[in-house]
Image 1 (cartoon, helix red, strand yellow):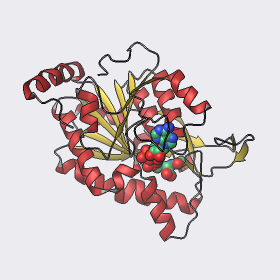
Image 2 (image 1 turned 90 degrees about the horizontal axis):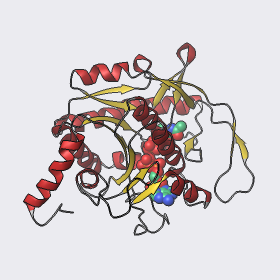
Image 3 (image 1 turned 30 degrees about the vertical axis):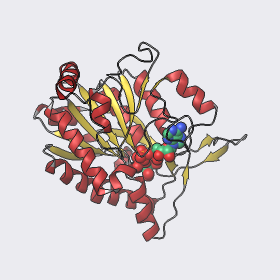
Image 4 (image 1 turned 60 degrees about the vertical axis):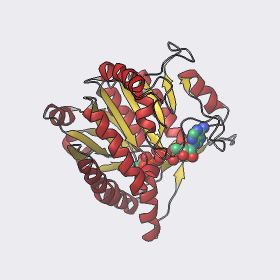
Length: 308
Ligand SMILES: Nc1ncnc2c1ncn2[C@@H]1O[C@H](COP(=O)(O)OP(=O)(O)O)[C@@H](O)[C@H]1O
Ligand SMILES: CC(=O)N[C@@H](CCC(=O)OP(=O)(O)O)C(=O)O
C-alpha cells in the first residue's frame, strides 16, 4: 500500500520516524512461513535493507519450522509439536542443525547480502550467545483442554543467559548479525530453542527499541480464521485476555510468551507484521497507522494516535 497519495507528505511523515529511530536497535524475527517462499524472503530482506539504509540497527533472528518439518518428513522423522514447540529427539535435533544453521540460514544470508545488508550468520551456540538448559518435562494445557498433560520436549533448551558480546562486536564493525535458533548447554550440548523465544531474549538483552515478528497473517487477530479481525494496538493485559479466551493457538502461544518476556524485559514495543503483504514492515515503522499489531506494556498510546 502506498504511504500517501502525496509523495512529499509521505516523505515528511516518514522523516519524523527516520529521525526518531536513527541508531536504535530493532530485532526482526523472520518466521518460517516468510522464509520458505523465496519471494517473501527476498521482500523481507529488502525491507530490512531499507531500515539499515536509514541508520536503524537491525538484528535478525530467523525461524524455519516449515522447512524443518519438510526435512523431518523426507527423513521419516516424527513431527510432533505441543503448544507451538517441537518435541526434539536426537535425530530431529540433527535435522534442526541442518536446516536452521545450514541451508535456510545460508539462503537468508545470501538474500540479505543481495539486498545490500552486510549480514553475518551465527547461531545461539556461537561464542556462548544463547546458553540454555534442557527443558524438564512440563505440564501443558492446550486451548480447549480442561486438564493439562506432562510433556517431555526432549532436546529443547530453556534459555538461561544471553551473552551479547559477539553481537555487539559485529555491530561495532557495522555488520548485521543473523541468528539461528539453536542454543548451547553444558558439556557441549546443543538444544533446539523456539525462534520467538530467542528473539525476545535477545531483544531484551540488547535493550532493543522494537521487536518485530514477521508472520504469515496480517498481525494479531481476534479470530484467527478472519484476517479482517486485525487488532491494531494491544496491551499485555489484552494479550492475556485473548489467551484466556483460547484465541491464541499453535505458534502464537510461544509468540505471546515471547512478547510478554520482551516487554517486561524493557523492549519499547513489539510488533506483529505480515511477511506476505509487501512493505508491511516499512508501513509499520514509518507510518502513523502502521500495518499490523503493536503490543505495548500498557496504554500510553491511545487508539487513533500515531503508532511509531
Ligand atoms: N489470534 C491469532 N492471531 C494471529 N495468528 C494466530 C492467532 N492464533 C494462532 N495464530 C497462528 O499463529 C501463526 C503464527 O505463528 P507461527 O506459525 O509460529 O509463525 P512463524 O513460524 O511464521 O513465526 C499464524 O500464522 C496463525 O496461524
Ligand atoms: C523448540 C522449537 O519449537 N523450535 C523450533 C525452532 C524453529 C522455529 O522456531 O521456527 P518458526 O519461527 O518458523 O516457528 C522448531 O523446531 O520448529
